[in-house]
Length: 98
Image (cartoon, rainbow, N blue to C red):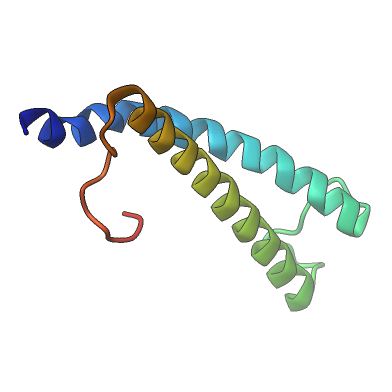
Protein backbone atom coordinates (compact mmCIF):
# COMPACT_ATOMS: atom_id res chain seq x y z
CA UNK A 1 0.00 0.00 0.00
CA UNK A 2 2.85 2.43 0.77
CA UNK A 3 4.25 1.80 -2.71
CA UNK A 4 0.98 2.96 -4.25
CA UNK A 5 1.05 6.22 -2.27
CA UNK A 6 4.66 7.06 -3.15
CA UNK A 7 4.50 6.24 -6.86
CA UNK A 8 2.77 9.48 -7.96
CA UNK A 9 5.57 11.43 -6.27
CA UNK A 10 8.18 9.28 -8.02
CA UNK A 11 6.43 9.95 -11.33
CA UNK A 12 6.77 13.74 -10.95
CA UNK A 13 10.33 13.95 -12.40
CA UNK A 14 9.33 11.65 -15.26
CA UNK A 15 6.26 13.78 -15.93
CA UNK A 16 8.37 16.94 -15.88
CA UNK A 17 10.82 15.57 -18.45
CA UNK A 18 7.97 14.29 -20.63
CA UNK A 19 6.24 17.68 -20.39
CA UNK A 20 9.39 19.55 -21.38
CA UNK A 21 10.11 17.21 -24.29
CA UNK A 22 6.50 17.24 -25.49
CA UNK A 23 6.48 21.05 -25.39
CA UNK A 24 9.58 21.20 -27.57
CA UNK A 25 8.12 18.62 -29.98
CA UNK A 26 4.81 20.49 -30.12
CA UNK A 27 6.64 23.73 -30.95
CA UNK A 28 8.34 22.08 -33.91
CA UNK A 29 5.07 20.49 -35.02
CA UNK A 30 3.26 23.84 -34.81
CA UNK A 31 5.89 25.63 -36.89
CA UNK A 32 5.63 22.93 -39.57
CA UNK A 33 1.83 22.97 -39.47
CA UNK A 34 1.72 26.77 -39.78
CA UNK A 35 4.10 26.66 -42.72
CA UNK A 36 1.85 24.05 -44.39
CA UNK A 37 -1.33 26.05 -43.68
CA UNK A 38 -0.15 29.57 -44.55
CA UNK A 39 3.18 29.02 -46.35
CA UNK A 40 4.87 31.38 -43.86
CA UNK A 41 7.83 30.76 -41.58
CA UNK A 42 6.48 32.84 -38.69
CA UNK A 43 3.04 32.46 -37.12
CA UNK A 44 1.31 35.64 -36.03
CA UNK A 45 1.55 36.83 -32.46
CA UNK A 46 -1.30 38.58 -30.65
CA UNK A 47 0.73 41.80 -30.72
CA UNK A 48 1.47 41.73 -34.47
CA UNK A 49 -0.01 45.01 -35.67
CA UNK A 50 -0.19 43.89 -39.32
CA UNK A 51 -2.16 40.70 -38.62
CA UNK A 52 -5.93 40.45 -38.38
CA UNK A 53 -8.04 38.89 -35.64
CA UNK A 54 -8.92 35.85 -37.72
CA UNK A 55 -5.31 35.01 -38.50
CA UNK A 56 -4.21 35.48 -34.88
CA UNK A 57 -7.06 33.38 -33.50
CA UNK A 58 -6.49 30.65 -36.11
CA UNK A 59 -2.82 30.44 -35.14
CA UNK A 60 -3.69 30.29 -31.44
CA UNK A 61 -6.29 27.56 -31.99
CA UNK A 62 -3.95 25.43 -34.09
CA UNK A 63 -1.11 25.89 -31.62
CA UNK A 64 -3.34 25.02 -28.65
CA UNK A 65 -4.69 21.90 -30.32
CA UNK A 66 -1.22 20.66 -31.24
CA UNK A 67 0.19 21.34 -27.75
CA UNK A 68 -2.74 19.61 -26.04
CA UNK A 69 -2.56 16.55 -28.29
CA UNK A 70 1.22 16.15 -27.97
CA UNK A 71 1.18 16.66 -24.19
CA UNK A 72 -1.66 14.17 -23.74
CA UNK A 73 0.14 11.60 -25.87
CA UNK A 74 3.34 12.05 -23.86
CA UNK A 75 1.52 11.89 -20.50
CA UNK A 76 -0.39 8.78 -21.50
CA UNK A 77 2.74 7.07 -22.86
CA UNK A 78 4.62 7.82 -19.63
CA UNK A 79 1.76 6.59 -17.45
CA UNK A 80 1.45 3.36 -19.43
CA UNK A 81 5.23 2.80 -19.19
CA UNK A 82 5.12 3.29 -15.39
CA UNK A 83 2.17 0.92 -15.12
CA UNK A 84 3.93 -1.74 -17.22
CA UNK A 85 7.13 -1.49 -15.18
CA UNK A 86 5.59 -1.24 -11.69
CA UNK A 87 2.06 -2.59 -12.03
CA UNK A 88 0.69 0.66 -10.55
CA UNK A 89 -0.97 3.55 -12.38
CA UNK A 90 0.92 6.78 -11.49
CA UNK A 91 -2.16 8.80 -10.55
CA UNK A 92 -4.81 7.82 -8.03
CA UNK A 93 -7.29 10.60 -8.74
CA UNK A 94 -9.75 10.63 -11.60
CA UNK A 95 -9.59 14.43 -11.96
CA UNK A 96 -8.41 16.43 -14.92
CA UNK A 97 -5.02 17.93 -15.65
CA UNK A 98 -3.46 20.13 -12.98
